[in-house]
Amino acid sequence: MSFSSEARDEVKNKYFTFKNRHSKITENREMIGEKEFLMALFIRSGSVSDPDKLYHLDFVCDSSEEAEEALKAIGSFGIAAKKMQRKGRPVVYLKDSEAITDMLALLGAHSALLHYENVRVERELRGTVQRRVNFETANINKTVSASLKQVEDIELIRDRIGFADLPEQLREIALLRLDYPEATLQELSEKIPEVGRSGINHRFRKIAKIADELRTNSSV
Image (cartoon, rainbow, N blue to C red; front, side, top):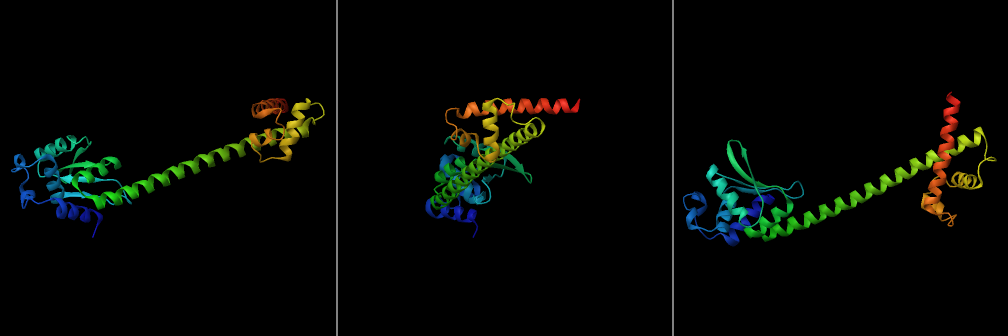
């Protein structure tokens, strides 16, 4: 049995006690409350996707009037829904995961709600972890790219003019970078703590400027 069918059966078995009312909802609309109306509509023509695949819950309506009634009823509980046409029939739907969990709670589909929440939390956790991994990977790539550029600049200076005429502070950081080509600025700053991370970065900018001048002069 599908997740959607299980949810419908749960609503029907636990909470829907008004026989046959779901078959002619519009005609009997004035006889039932907003919650009962939505329960009946869900039992008759509602569906909810397995959250492992996507977030989607909808009510297929018989008429535009019924769809408007559904939108109004859902809105009365502070839940946002939208309307669309599917195969010529109006459909009221929800795609927001929190709105769907609110709707499942309202309909009384508590087992479906529990499963939905568990999957939603797991998906959000996986998403958070993946974003963190992406962030760390981007930082690593950025650090590696910067380090490679610094090594390239330093080797150019070494091969063209040597280190003898470099100011002592630039010579110090150039030799340190060659010894530790993969180290971060923070790691380099720990080896010369009196300079600090910003000071080391400033020295690399000066080295880059010298290297760029050498490149420019060689191309003239």
